[in-house]
Structure formats: C-alpha cells, structure tokens
Length: 319
Ligand SMILES: NC(=O)c1ccc[n+]([C@@H]2O[C@H](COP(=O)([O-])OP(=O)(O)OC[C@H]3O[C@@H](n4cnc5c(N)ncnc54)[C@H](OP(=O)(O)O)[C@@H]3O)[C@@H](O)[C@H]2O)c1
Ligand SMILES: *[C@@H]1O[C@H](CO)[C@@H](O)[C@H](O)[C@H]1NC(C)=O
Ligand SMILES: *[C@@H]1O[C@H](CO)[C@@H](O)[C@H](O)[C@H]1NC(C)=O
Ligand SMILES: *[C@@H]1O[C@H](CO)[C@@H](O)[C@H](O)[C@H]1NC(C)=O
Ligand SMILES: *[C@@H]1O[C@H](CO)[C@@H](O)[C@H](O)[C@H]1NC(C)=O
Image (tube, rainbow, N blue to C red; front, side, top):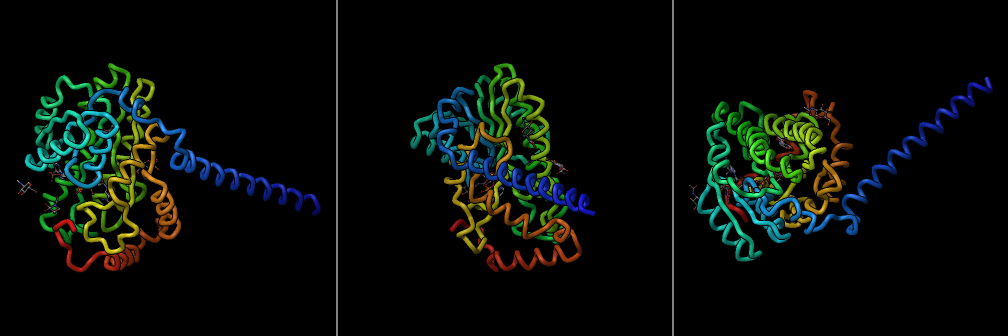
C-alpha cells in the first residue's frame, strides 16, 4: 500500500516537472523571439541575402507595410499586383521615401499557370534575396457558409489560385537562383486560421493550412542550401480586409506589424508576427477549442461572434 502511494507521488512529481519545463520553454521562446532586441539579425544581415525583395499584393495592408519596411532596411523592391496605377503610385512612394530602386509587374493572381510567364520575364536578371508571398483574399467580405456567397464556383477558383497557387508558383520561380547562390529568404503570409479547420471561413482557412504545411516542408528541403523559410500567421491587422471590424483596439496597425514581424526573421520559422498576437492567439486557442468550433453549434456561435464584432453595413472604403 505504502509503496503504491510512493509510486503515484513520484509519477505526479515527474508530470508536474514536465509541465513546468514545457511552460518555461514556451515562455523562454516567446521572450527570445519577440522581446530581446540584441538577438535580432538587423538590416546588414537582411541585405546580404540579395539586393532585391519581391512582394506580392504590395499596394495595401500588410504587403504595403512589408514593402516599405524592407525598403527602409535597404532593399530594392519588386511590386506585383493587379492595378497598374496603384502599383506605380506605391513604387514612386518607395523611391521617394526610402531612395531605393523599384520595379512593378502587373498580374492578377486569380489567373492560372499562364500569368507566371510575365512574372518570370519581369524578374529576369534580378538578384532576389527576399520573397514575401503576401497576396491573399477571403471569398466573402465577412464570415459566411459556403453556399451563401455569390457565384461559388468562381470565388473558390479565385481563392485557391490567389492564396495557394500564387505562393507555390512564386516560390518555384525565385527558388532556383536562391539555391544557386546558397542564400535567400521566403516569407509566406498565412493567417491564424491555418492551424485547424474554421467553419464560415472554410476555403480561406484551408488555403492557409496549405501555406503553413507547404512552407514547413519546403523549408526543410532547402534549409541545408541556405534558404530560410518563415511562415507568418497574424491575427487581425488593419487593412482593407478588416476595415469593417468594430473593436479597433484589438487590431494592429500594419506598419507596426511588418516592423515587428521582420524583427523575428532568422529567429523562428513559425510566428504570429508579434508579441501581442502571440498572446491573443494563445488565449483564443484556450477559449475556443476545436471540438466546439467543429460541432453543430460551432458555426452558429461563430456567426453570433462575427455579428457582434463586425459593423452592420460593411463600407468598402478605407476609413
Ligand atoms: N488583415 C488581416 O487581418 C489578416 C489576418 C491574417 C492574415 N492576413 C493575410 O495577409 C495577406 C494580406 O492581407 P491584407 O489584409 O493586407 O489584404 P489587402 O489590404 O486586401 O491587400 C491585398 C493586396 O493584394 C493585392 N491583390 C488582391 N487581389 C489580387 C489579385 N487577384 N491579384 C493580384 N493582386 C491582388 C491588392 O492589390 P490590387 O488591388 O492592386 O491588386 C493589395 O495590394 C493575405 O494573405 C491575408 O490572407 C490578413
Ligand atoms: C486602380 O486603382 C485606382 C485608384 O485606387 C482606381 O481609381 C482605378 O479604378 C483602379 N483600376 C482598376 C482597373 O481597378
Ligand atoms: C512558402 O514557402 C516555401 C519555401 O520555399 C515555398 O516553397 C512555398 O511554395 C511557399 N508557399 C506555400 C504555399 O507554402
Ligand atoms: C499541417 O501540419 C501540422 C503540423 O505542423 C499538422 O498537425 C497538420 O495535421 C497538418 N495538416 C493541416 C491540414 O494542417
Ligand atoms: C477594398 O476591397 C474592395 C472589395 O474587396 C475593393 O472593391 C476595393 O477596391 C478595395 N479598396 C482598396 C483601397 O484596395
């Protein structure tokens, strides 16, 4: 009897020690990645990977903030998105504010394989050190069931081409010269929805799960050849995608976000981008368990939550 209790006590102590170690490891990693300025890699390290950075979707939101921050840290920028007048305006701004060279490529990423010829031609001869796969779209303005969006077939094809195909193809275009120089950084912008299935965001969340898993796998394939892959999975960032969200205090400004997220480069291959999002995502995971989201009540609850946080009339203009 006595010895049974002793065994149980010892087991309890070992379990408690393991849990404590695990928690300490988590806290230690968080501090290292987000809160220790001296370990950050800095601009010279970034520039050593190549003179140019390519950013997809650079005319608004997160992509625009990344483009400006990379230029501020000394890289020339290639901007790739749909609207030529927005692209040219952004390129002029980058040249004016940061004194770097720019190049624009007009492409609609909802297209298929044929659009990547223009990208290849546009990038010919450039030493690309950093690729930011940022372009991405939701299939509805807010959360919705699959059949509640207009023209489902077209929207699904757009989301898959824009969020998945673009990342894979852009990487395949830029990777060869990075591998031959044994230097390069690929940043894939994913989303907090990449960890588990999300009802009401089904195709979007699944496309981001692809981004995360693909990045991890390709990162493992090429890390021995000097290519660094990072997946950034933010929560809510101020941008056109979120302009109808109510509680703005929870939403991070995209310029601050890009600065903090770029500071984590070289320190971690998976990040939510900044300390405040790391904390918010941990809290969200604790309060909204997967089994509940995926039960029959999950979508109803998420819809209520969505209605509580989104303004009734979505405005399509930036505030
Ligand atoms: N905002 C958030 O809270 C949040 C949270 C998690 C993850 N993310 C992810 O972060 C990324 C950027 O989001 P964002 O909020 O910054 O978006 P955004 O403000 O809507 O900007 C989208 C950018 O992509 C371009 N673009 C859109 N559709 C395109 C297409 N079909 N072909 C080419 N370019 C296109 C737009 O330029 P043009 O109009 O000129 O084409 C614009 O520069 C996305 O991958 C998104 O999933 C965002
Ligand atoms: C491109 O953007 C400008 C400025 O936002 C807008 O006026 C114009 O209509 C857009 N062009 C297209 C083809 O969407
Ligand atoms: C993300 O990064 C990896 C690293 O090279 C790349 O191969 C992949 O295509 C990118 N995109 C996705 C969807 O993971
Ligand atoms: C992706 O990778 C994670 C591990 O990082 C794994 O748990 C998960 O099952 C994979 N698949 C999807 C769809 O996320
Ligand atoms: C915001 O998004 C809407 C619809 O997705 C689009 O029509 C509008 O042009 C975008 N605005 C900007 C400033 O990009």
